[in-house]
Length: 73
Image (cartoon, rainbow, N blue to C red):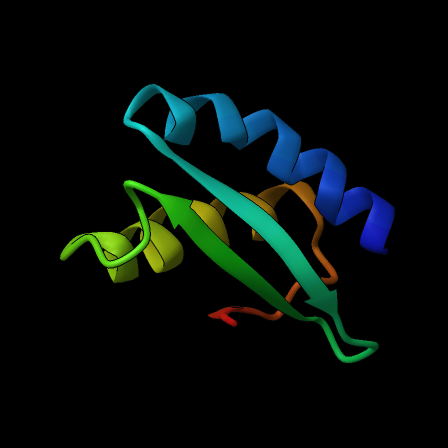
């Protein structure tokens, strides 16, 4: 599942990079919890939680149905 998640993150990465940010995959647990680290302009941005839940989590769940939740590491 880690490879699927990484592949999906690679699809969304250019959108984050356009705004000066990025996302790094930290861990994927067996029970579908994905841990990522937002970097660059996304790190500490007031909108980072919304980006994480409404953007990254929603996208990952649509691309990899086994994903249950995305958390910041």
